[in-house]
Image (cartoon, rainbow, N blue to C red; front, side, top):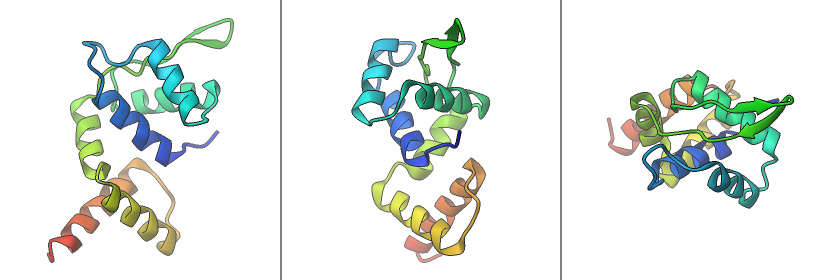
Length: 125
């Protein structure tokens, strides 16, 4: 399974906007995923990858080899830093265009570096 980086961005924004002490609830997270037409297995995969990257505080709980609780938790410092670099829609679109034009492999680090380049470019640096 591959990460959908548009969904990663959307999910990070969703987590950052949660009013709950421990981040979005299981029900809220699943409803959010459904609203984006993302199947539960893709959601679970994404939540686990964000946890592995150190961007969120919780990983998926499984029962009978199926996602039981899909609660990404809160954003970590690193998660907030990453989101801040890609949150602006214009910057995000520029990043995607730059990566596409250059034919780069997508990773969190490449996106973060591209975000820095886009911000520097927009500031004339």
